[in-house]
Amino acid sequence: MCENQEGTHFHSHFPSFEECVAFHGHACPGLATGYRVATAAMKRLGVARPNDEELVCVAETDACGVDAIQVVTGCTAGKGNLIIHDYGKHVFSFFSRNTNRAIRVRVCEVKRGERSEMDALRKKVFSGTASHEEEGAFRSLMQEATAHLLSVPEDALLQIAEISSPPPVKARIFATITCACCGEPVADAKTRVVDGSRVCIPCAESRAQGGERRSP
Ligand SMILES: [Zn+2]
Ligand SMILES: [Zn+2]
Image 1 (tube, rainbow, N blue to C red):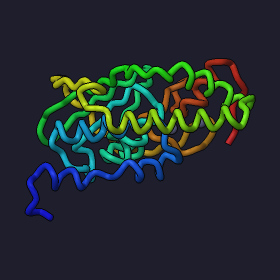
Image 2: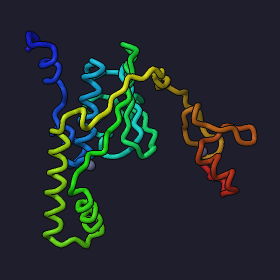
Image 3: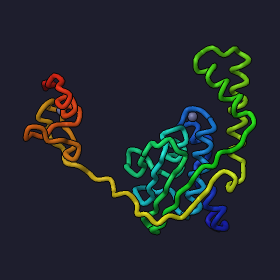
């Protein structure tokens, strides 16, 4: 297998879309878009799935696609190399610490005739007012849109630009202290100083709102 031409060899190492579906719970256009973003970014940066934090992703949405990003790129919320700034935009930046390269991937609006029909049906399905037929129609439109997004040429779907901004700072391991107010252990860096003592954010906020002091 390692005799393969590099590209082929590399491709075969991406997790499949089905693996993303298993992680996410369903197949949907958002997940398909995230899958295209993730695989395109890995190819463009020439990086393999990271074990640690060599690759960092900043996602400007918290929607379905983020789950495909996590499965394919190994940038995960728990490792700290997936950072979500939810600006409600389908834009994802990737930073490779090993190569010092960074790209910004923007998802273009794909013009699809059935889009408005799908949006109308979605409202009905999620409010529980859709008929059996409408539910079926919604599912098949979703399936179609998902298949389309998985097969549409990359340059019709994504705009990829090299960027020069540095990667966000590394996830740090924080010391744990005890909140002076609720008595719960809390990461030092996430505390606030209130009346000269260190307290956790919820305690600091409830004090600021004049709320009841939480007792241990
Ligand atoms: Zn989804
Ligand atoms: Zn507290």
